[in-house]
Length: 108
Image (cartoon, rainbow, N blue to C red; front, side, top):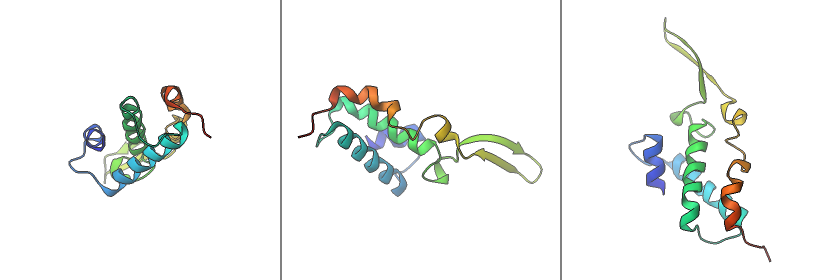
């Protein structure tokens, strides 16, 4: 799954930040669904979640710093929207909840 995330993000190698975000997404899915292993049907949810977290700019500048707001060409200056992830719900588990609901188990 991590290799697919690497391809989606357009990176040549898997970085420690990518590994951390991947492990975090796995933990979120396992805890939400109350399961010990990720079934094949949830792999796409994990991949989407990791890609969204990385591309939102929330974890590291190397994966983007949000949506580009403005560019100045003289002496090159770029401004990014730092709240891009928050505005579009990339931090919110609710955007993945419908896809995970079928895999959720009762917690004893």
